[in-house]
Image 1 (tube, helix red, strand yellow):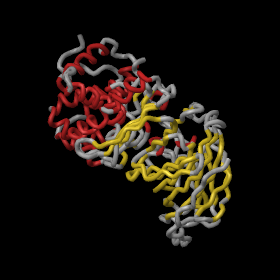
Image 2: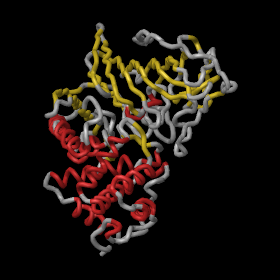
Image 3: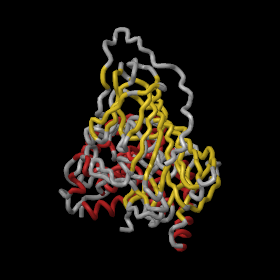
Image 4: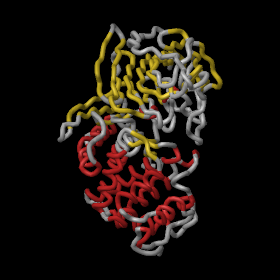
Length: 478
C-alpha cells in the first residue's frame, strides 16, 4: 500500500463437484474440537481462525448498484488441521445458508465478524472438505476494527483496502498466513466492465447482466483479492518478455485525468520488466493496474493488478508493482512484519529513481538521514520496525525509515551483494510467508556479515542510528 502523497435475483452457478469426503476415523487423536474463532495475530485477534487451512476460494457475487446490495455464494476448499466438531470463517454480511460437503450445516454468530459452522459430521485432521456459504447484505455501513471499507457509488465499485477487505464481500480465513488460490466471478449489468486478479477466463451475458470470471493461479492473501466493476477503458497487451498486462481506467474520470492515468498505467509493463531484471522472475501470470474514479487516498498492491486513485504518479506505480514480490509473493507472517512489505517497496522506488536519472541510492540515503537525524527521538526513529503496533503499521517510519534500512544495508554489503540478497530472498520465500527475524538471519547467512548490531540500531534502537560505517552511513548527523 502507498498512501496518497500528492497530499434479487442472484445468478448462482452449480457447486463444483466434491471429491474426497472428509474421513471420520479419529484414530488416537481424541475427540474432535471446536476450531477457534481467533487467528494467529495479536494485532487483530479475530483475523483468521483456528483448525483449518484454506486451499481454494470460488467466490461468486452479484452486485446491485442502485440498492448497494451484494449477494454472494462462496465455496471454499479447506483442509482440517485438527479433528473438528466446528470451525469458523470471517464474514460481515448476513448469512442465509451454509453447507459442508453438500449437507446443510448449523451456523451461528459468536460476534458480528465471525461465522461459526457446525457440520453434520465431524471432520478429521488432514481431511479436505468444502464449505458453501450464501450471504446477502449492504456492505457500505458495516464496520470492523474501526474501518468502513466499502468503496462504491451508483456507477462504480472497487473492493480495495488493507489490512482488511474480504469480510465485506466473501467469507474467509482472513489473515495473510493462510494463502489460497482463487476463482472470482462477478455479476453486474452487462454495460459494466469487471476487473479482478490474475487471468480473465470468461464473460457470459444474459439480456441485461454479465458474469465475468477471473482466476488467480498462485496463492494469494485474502486482503489482496479484489474486483472493480464500472465503466472502464481497457488496454491489453504483453510486456517485452511476454507477460500479459491488463490495464483499466475509469471512464467516469474527466478526460484530462483519464488520459493521464492511462499514460501512467502504460508504464506498468516496462516497470515490471525492470523489477524482474533486479529481483528475479515475475512471480505471477499477469500484470496491470486499475485507476478508479472513486475518492481513494491510497493505492493498493492487489495481486497482479494494483489499484490507484486518479492522482497516480510514477513512483506509486513502482511501489505497488514492487509489492508483487514484497508483500504478495512473499507475504508477512504477522502484521508486525509489515516492514518487509512497505520498507522494501519504498526502497524499490528509490532504486528505480536512481536508475532513471534521479539521485543515487547513496545521495537519497544521506539526504534523508540528514533531514531526520536532528530529531533523533522523534516517532520516526523511536517506532520499532519489527513490531510497530496495530495503530502504526502505515506510519511514515515503516515506509521511509524502512527503506533507509535497506539503503544502509546496501552500503554495508555492496550494490551487487544487495541485489543478490534480495533476489535470493524472494526466490527462497516465493508464494510463502516470512518474518522480520527470518530476514535478519537470512541476510547474515547470505552476505556473511555480522549484522546483529546493524539491525538493532536501525529497526529497534529507539533513536536515530549513529552515522557510522557499521550502520551503513557515510557521516555523522550534521
